[in-house]
Image (cartoon, rainbow, N blue to C red; front, side, top):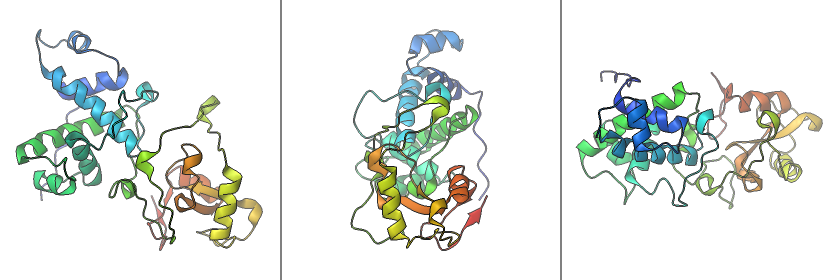
Amino acid sequence: MRARRAPRLDGKYARIFRAVLSDPSVTDAQIIEEEAFKPGDKSTRTGRPLALQFMATLRALGGRLPPTSASWSPATARSPLDSTDGQILRAVLLEPEAGPDRIIELSTEPYKPRTRGGAQTISNMARTFIAVVEKMGGQLPDRRFIDAPGQIHMFLETSEVFESDIITDERTNIIAQIVERRGQAQFRTSLLNAYNHRCAMSGCKVEEVLEAAHIVPYRGPQTNVESNGILLRADLHTLFDLGLITFPIRLEQVGLR
């Protein structure tokens, strides 16, 4: 299969997405004026709402918006995945090279695209949005947690399922974006017991250097769930948080980027 061409970052919709990511409160008229579109241009009527939908979906799946829109919050409490556009962005994040038929297959009812043309058009816009987000310093979600929204696949047998898509961000941002880890001691104790007081990667048994690492990043006490944690030696915890080491879902082997 021939490789898909990279999205253009100077196209009309890329410019609309960049404008909304720079200022989520921007209006259609302001975009038309600032981007020097022709008077009466209707692209923003589609592009601006689509950008906001994509922004909400990206955040719901665990991604990070660029610094210019990091503090933005959707105006509605409705799940971003309860929409066709949200499902298409999720599909593209999961399989970037997916064609329209595969996009439809990856989407869930009742929000599947109804036509191949629609799936093709919106998926192309989704790829443009993703490229703009990365260019502006945003971060895409980990694909491990996109394949089944609402359920994290873990090696632990547990009756308590951690649902990442219903978690609201309750982090308290301090200087340098330091996060206050409330309830961390109890979370660590739970993981110490679950892992028999050994680092899941190295097998280290020195309890003083073992830390409770979050799989889905910390977003408040509700993320301190045993099924969302891995017990790691302190240095490995840091590498894991930086994305320099990754674990397959069942921790059968470790991969270095």
